[in-house]
Amino acid sequence: MYWITLFSFLFFTGLVAFGTWLIVRGREHNSMNGFFLAGRSLTAPFIGGSMLLTNLSTEQMVGLNGSAYAEGICVMVWKVLAVVTLVVSALLFLPKFLRAGVTTIPEYLAKRFNPRTGKICNLIFLLSYTFGLLPIILYTGATGLGGILDLKALTGIRSDTLLLWYIVLFIGTLGSVYALFGGIRTVAVSDLLNGIGLLTGGFMILFFALAKAGAGQGILAGLQNVYASGPEKFNPIGAETSSVPFSSLFTGVLLINLFYRCTNQQIFQRTFGAESLEEGQKGILLCGALKLIGPLYLVLPGMIAFYFFSSREIKADHAYGMLVRYVLPAPLAGFSA
Image (cartoon, rainbow, N blue to C red; front, side, top):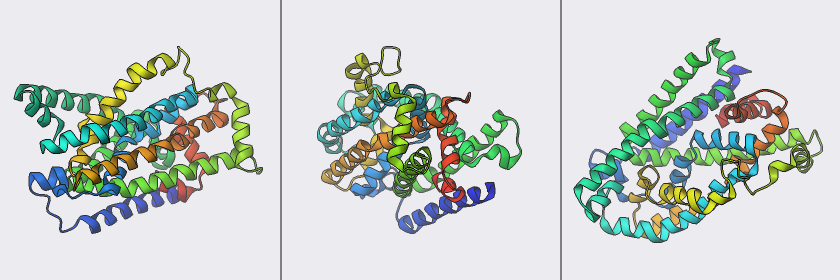
């Protein structure tokens, strides 16, 4: 069973790599324009899909579902406000950046203010990505992959820490190969292909989980059972003790979303490669439309995991991986991973 899951994971990962190579081969990426901006040739589907998957890293799939496992549906506010700020990004920020003809956000600030401001912003981005963002992505990626593939049983490695390091090195190396040798075009294409898989796998997990919760009575019965097990978790208004209290929605959460969707180099880089302002705006709005259904695969599975595993003492970050392995057939679990 473990080998079937692992084989399907490697097969679909290889399929995405091969498909990406077929699409990007022969494209120029040795120049700065080609490497960082894909020759300014990206269209809306690639921009929207890549923005979606850049954001929906494992800190979202594992972390947000883990938060839903612990707190309930109120954590969906991160996805709801994301749609609002993406509209602001498309209508207000993108036209300014493209008119300036810049490659990065720090470059825009250097032009708008002075070179020292651009350098300070560069330093802040590099430090925050290196010590803030990437460790979380690598940790949650390793946690999710280890849980879905049950790598502890498969490899025989009993030390959680040692296994975590091995998976982190694998994920980090694979991601580096994509980014360093292919540039932004390769990342955007593989993101689009993976994004299609993510949406397919996300809804597949939701369907199988609700069907299992329904115990043969259908997915609606499953949803009713999940609701009955913890109706308080379906309260969308965050309490003052929650990680997203209602009082924070129009202050902290909104401000963080405005930064993240409108001025974050990691997210916005794809739009700089748009072949036109119209394609860039359509790509951002496509990402926003996909965000509207985000709670279905980023929040609800965590609450279903609570229905299945609340009697066990597990970490919230382990809930998503356990749910995938519990409800999906082995080949589909590998596809999801």
